[in-house]
Image (cartoon, rainbow, N blue to C red; front, side, top):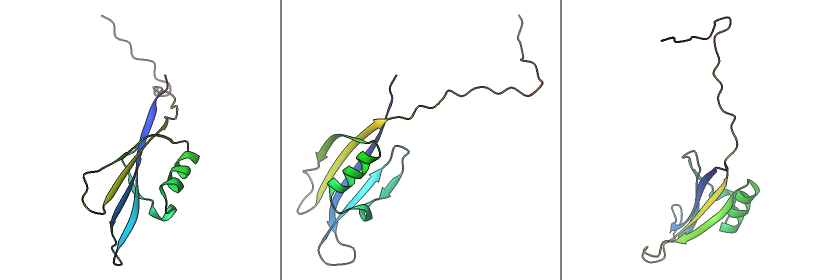
Length: 104
């Protein structure tokens, strides 16, 4: 059965921290719970989505938060990709020890 893993790319327009005005910031929320500022990897959503696509991610849906006042913007790009197959864990028995059997 095919299983999926999901990630989220968030594009936010916010007040600039080093200058007067606005800046665009991109944050990647990975399937492992990580949160990474990926702003240095590109200045457009397309650049980030193409980079994610090169890594096997597929865009599922995009949403915008219209409730933010003024010039603030918040866009969310929801992505998915097939989860890598992992072999089932095998039990390793101690070398030279017979399997323990329970008899009733």
